[in-house]
Length: 86
Image 1: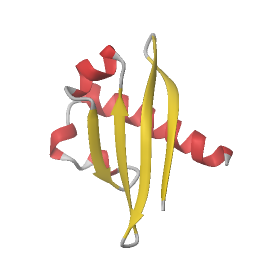
Image 2: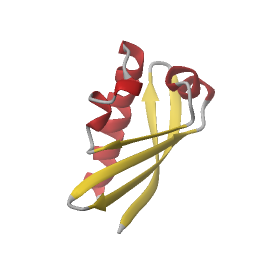
Image 3: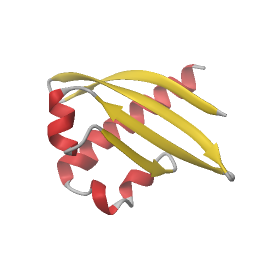
Image 4: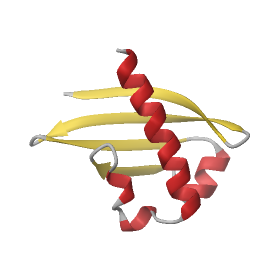
């Protein structure tokens, strides 16, 4: 079963939004993010990303760079805040 939700988070001086899909497959979590804001698109270079595990972005070769990691750390915290509210 998948959990689908939107999250809003502050990154630097911007308020950004992302659509989050978390799905468990074969005992592990897979995360898909879709961003809509121009600032997030500029940093990530694409509107959709996917990775295995809640912190899988840290190991992804496509998601390297200080600014990318900083943004995804912020998204990660927003996801955890959302999940902990339920």
